[in-house]
Every structure is written in C-alpha cells, then in structure tokens.
Amino acid sequence: MSLEPFAPSRALTLGVELELQIVNTHDHDLAPHAPDLLRVLRGVALPGDIKPEVTRSMVELSTGICDDHRAVLAQLRTLRDALVDAARRLEIGLCGGGTHPFQHWKRQRIYAEPRFRQVSALYGYLARQFTVFGQHVHVGCPSGDDALLLLHGLARWMPHLIALAAASPFVQGEDTAFDSARLNSVAAFPLAGRAPFVTTWRDFEAYFDRMARTGIVSSMKDFYWDIRPKPEFGTIEVRVLDTPLTIDKAAALAALIQCIAAWLRAERPYVPGEDDALVYGFNRFQACRFGLDGLCVDPTDGAQRTMRADLLALFARIEGHAIDRHAEPAIALLRQSLQEDGNDATWLRRTYDRERQLAEVVRLQVARWAATDT
Image 1 (tube, rainbow, N blue to C red):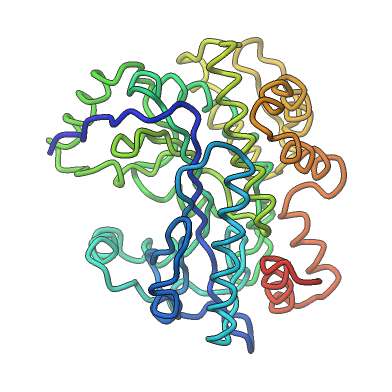
Image 2 (image 1 turned 180 degrees about the vertical axis):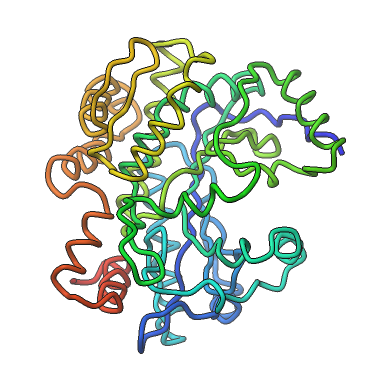
C-alpha cells in the first residue's frame, strides 16, 4: 500500500482533537457509555465532530479547520456544551485529564468498530491499557516538504509541551511520581516516539513504502510518533499533549503550537538536525517525570535549563506572532499558569492532598470540565 499524496492546506491553520473520559456519577469510575452518548448527539448541529475511540469509556471531539485561537476556543466551547448537555441527560460525567486516576484496564471494553477490533487483535491487552486521553493539534502545511521541515523544527519543543500539558499523575489508584504517566502507555507501542529524520516528502514516501512492504504498517495511523504527518489533511499532528482539564487550556495550547510554528516558518531560528535526536529521549523523560521542573538539554550548546525557564523565554520570543494571530490571551493564560499553579498534574495532586479520595478528584474534574464552580 502506497502513502496517500500530500493534500496541500493553508499554512498554519489549526484543528484540535480531544479525547475525553466518560465516568458514572456514583463512584466516578470510567463507564462504557460512548454508544449512548453518541446516540443522544445524533443529528445535533456541531462545528466539528464527536466520534468513538478505542474503548467504550472514551469519546473524541474535534474542531473543524480554524484560523486562530479565537476560532478554536469558540468551536471547543460549542462542542463541550453539547457534550455536557448530552451527558447530563444520561446522568454521566465527562472530564479531561490524561489518565483516569483509578480505573483498571482489564475492565475496559473495545468499541465495536473494525479499526479498534483490529488494534485489539494485534496489540492484545495494550489496546485496553491504552485507555488514556490526549489532545492532538493539527497544523496546516502547503506541501509535504514544508510539513517535514515544520515537524522536525517543532520536535525540539515537544518536551516543553509535554511538561506544560501534563495531566496524568495517577494510574490505577497510585501516584506514579510522573507528571505525564500517559505517555508511558503510548511508549509501549512499537512505532512510538520520535519520527525518523527524513527531510523531503519524496524520501518520506520511500520510507513509508519500505515499511509497508514489510507488512508493519498500512497507513499513517499505524505510527504512534510524537508528531506525524497527516497527508490526507495536509497537516502535521502534534500528539504529546495530555487532555487538559479545561477548554480554555486546550485552546491555549493549540494557539501556542500555532505561534511556535509561525515563528519557525518566518524566522528559522535554528536548523533542526540529527543532533536533536541525541538529547530528545532525555528531555522527553524529564518532561514526563518532573514536568515543568524537568531539565532540558539544548542540542546546540549542551546548556541545561528547566522546562519552565525555556518556556518563559519562548513566550517572549514569539510575542509578535501571538499578536498577529490574536493569541495574546492564550499566551497570558499559559504564562500565568507557569508562574502560579504549574500544570494540571499539580492541580490534580493538590486536589487529592485536600480531598484524600480519588473519586472526589474525578468529581471535581467533571465540574471543572463543565465550567461549573469547583
């Protein structure tokens, strides 16, 4: 099977996908009600889409094509409101967060669609263990070559985005000591991690063809890379973010990625190269484990700084692009979180320290997602 041709799209347009937890309202464990939720929403006019995911205790919402932060935020709010209304009618809850704090993978049921059954047949228990929840951000690219250039440029900032979006400290009732434990589940898949350093679309097509001939892959969906091209959409897809606890945070993260991409395209502040791979694994682990306090090694000079310090410096460097793209409120929200509360993993741990029950943490996550008082 050959790779689909790259369908050009307008540079720097955005699309956002969010995987959400479906929980019951008596003990706040995950609940297999995705079919019911989708049934209630059938026929409702929406700006994007709401569809099933690999297990029946999760659902994915996605925006349409957006130009900027304002459009992303407006569409996400409309989708959120429709989902929350449907969930209330079914007496279930929805929330963000990269992992459910105390669900057990063996209780999860695969959604009855051919793609998900195929994944389950291939990966066994990993498919049900993959009941984790992420935010994916698509960035429009005018050509395949542009997509690969942007992919490798953005790769340097993946650890920082992991740290900023981390929202999965608890797994199966335990504090993992990681800010983003979700990505440990993703790493179990054989084609996860960093994309190969291929810089032209012709070379990428040749790479895909070699992989397809082995029978390892049949489409881009078989790659679980941190960033991957999506030729049918004309985008690159950033996949490292845990699902945030609020719509505002999700829209802000998408806007940040757009502003970094605009900065990379306009100013070419560095040339990505093979040396980036030397420190990528270390930086990624530091972000998952320690969040914003993790260390990041600069592949250019070997200097070490915290993710937090690097991000604050980045916000200053992309300020002009944020103004051009009406993203100042998004960057202000993220800067405030850096200087005050940290990431969502911090909020989850502080909430547990106060409440001492993980079920109560999830109840408050549901309220936070619905934008009610917590």
